[in-house]
Length: 375
Image 1 (cartoon, rainbow, N blue to C red):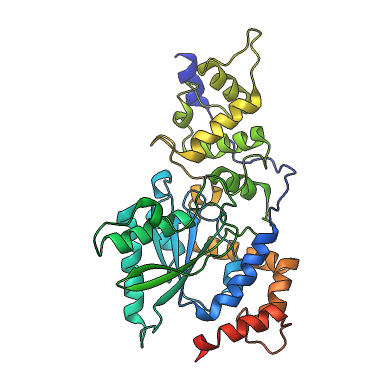
Image 2: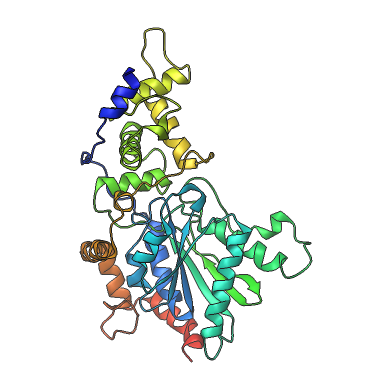
């Protein structure tokens, strides 16, 4: 038996990843500002569209949204389906009584499905909203919200009338490959006239802190964090870890090395060798090779780079386990100062109707603007 075949036959992937001492927070001022804005706009909103990255469906869930937008009906949109291998039946188990769609934010066909779901929602409302269905699109940074808004508007308008609008005019939300392109909640944008649907595009909002380093690394792999935020070698090692959990044969990185490995240094050496980046003395740029390895999976420019970065999704945790994770996450986040500020502004139930909430001048201004929507 050849050496690569022998190694593949005896290979056992790691089942434990080191708990590195990573910074577990990337919460910024515009995230707090966006959360406050969500609470101020809540009385106007009929429906929430929450976007999560389907490669990390659990890590890109922000439990703060359920607090600041309490009692609002929601459709969860799992974006980047072209890059993910998450099983639809698994999502169905996790969303027993909640509507969700599996979408590609750039796909006109998927935009049409979302608009059809919005039309169904309008038809269930009695009486129908007189000012159109007012929605808000929310999610963690860089999960595809603004791209989806642009595609929804393009589909909502061009499918109903003459295609005379230029591409530049159709693009109503700024997009980019790094998180933080959208910094402020937009003015309301009309997506469609039949049905009459309007949306607020919002900045991505990070959690005050995440629960552990694996969650942070999963968020790094899907692009919720700037590429410079985590050490590239640690990020590459976590990618190797989750790829081996999904396929212990090593097939997912076989373009670089012909047998599976748990050793990130061994893999990086072979990446450098295959890319002809080895120096004469056999050394190589570890950071450069790590960045290359992570980027091809983060960007997913080829059908080979489809996968999952959430350990719980890879292990196919059942609905009870996911509910427990969510309860634990809510309990953890409720202890943060960010949550305490939300509770002070909107009350502990998150509705803004509590008598004991600490109303600021901006809260009172928002209340006056929302009087029309409370009639």
